[in-house]
Amino acid sequence: MPKVKVIHGPNLNMLGKREVSIYGPGTLDQINGAMKGLAGRLGIEISVIQTNSESEIIDEIQRDDYDLLIINPAAYTHTSIAIRDAISAVNKPAIEVHLSNIHGREEFRRRSYIAEVALGQISGFGPGSYMLALRAAAKILLEEPPHKLDA
Ligand code: DQA
Image 1: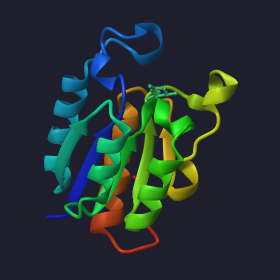
Image 2 (image 1 turned 90 degrees about the horizontal axis):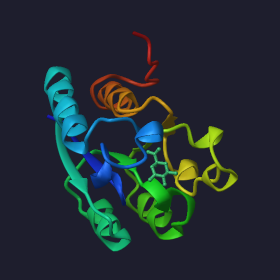
Image 3 (image 1 turned 30 degrees about the horizontal axis):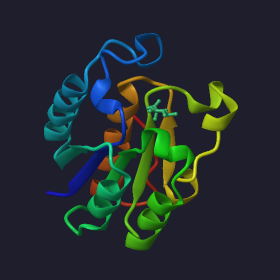
């Protein structure tokens, strides 16, 4: 079974308590539970990590124990050339995810260092952003190219 690694970056452990008007009332455990359920139905294996540490994110990206990366780098999206370089170095497909629409918020959030090394970015659908990323991952891992995301 293909393996997807999901990395949640800094402050995402605070979901449910943190800026609920932006990020919604759902907790990270609820999002992870929903993702595990969907992954089972799609026929992919997932492992999920949350860390507030940039170096741990890089170590996880470098670990050769997955086929595709789903990553919400949170604030590191806008600052971390090191995470961008790690994704580029391992040469595995990566999907960038955000709960909020980073293009509709403050100017500094519009710049993503990750987008250029990701297959694509899903931003603005709340917890649904992760579910859409998983569906895209299943298409990419289980079907032949060109990965048209129909139905
Ligand atoms: C976020 C958006 C980032 O700008 C912010 O720093 C986060 C969460 C999101 O999921 O919407 O922590 O990545």
